[in-house]
Length: 420
Image 1 (tube, rainbow, N blue to C red):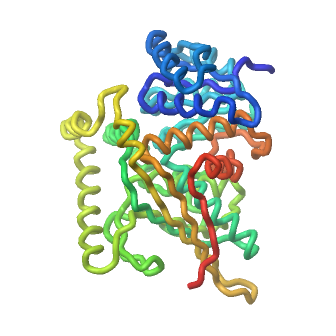
Image 2 (image 1 turned 120 degrees about the vertical axis):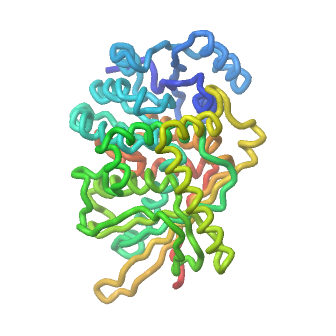
């Protein structure tokens, strides 16, 4: 079926949606073939204002079609999905607003990508729509922003290097986050607080949040060992420094393990993945790691209590449609380091692989807009993608072609074998 658009950006009038729209407008005339796209949202007036601003980036954007819809109306989302090869969504919290659109795309064979980090919602989609999406061929790809592309594609990059160089995967991948300047987007914080609110009354969500394998097909560890997220300061001898819990590890680790399962356990059934915040070595590093751990614990505890959660929502979240200035976004950056540990086997010695994933803008806004925009273009334009449908991950749904796109867009994806 020939659809009128390659790509529809749903949520184009929100703060992150506008950044993605600006990124896509900047790609007009730069892609291997032209792409037909449209802006979509709830308000005609706001969409017109966004379109007018995009015309200053590229004059062709002045003629962008504008589509109206309602996130909670399935018929409206069916109509939207019917018009595009790919729908790219920034409308969250996704647990509250995202299900009708995912259902529509899965049913109609329309590819989809978003920036959710809400793992219980992803689990719901796996249970409800994975089989449908497999049948229709729809690639439903969640977590295409700062959570979880650096973790998911970084691990894929390390494991691809391991297989090509040593003929076997790394049994363990450790991932340290930092240094970083910039923060989580308002949407990410809102989604986290919304999850804590849902978990307050839903035991299933609480269990999913605590299980690193909650997104694998059966929700269980393939190797049977008990694994839990890091909750306190920890010294890592392989990196030679202290580490602290990284709040987004509760998202990223689940995506990495789902990728392994979807890739037929290409990383191995005994694969372990650890993610944490990078601190320094010595006493100073231990103090910082302890302080950071206490802070994360306090925010999580406060977010679990209704009145205090509402206070956090008022104090931590920007107003709808608002976010940091362009100067603040462009002065940000992030860098993460991965270490793949390849075990000895068949007379071959053990080996170490180091990967680096980095970006030159605020990770929660500027780099997330780039990651989501390139994910949408990858699904819409690239022919060399895995030919599978389902509820997927960036690594399983797009893989190394997306790594190549992000490199070309200015992100760092570097991998090498290192001495012990």
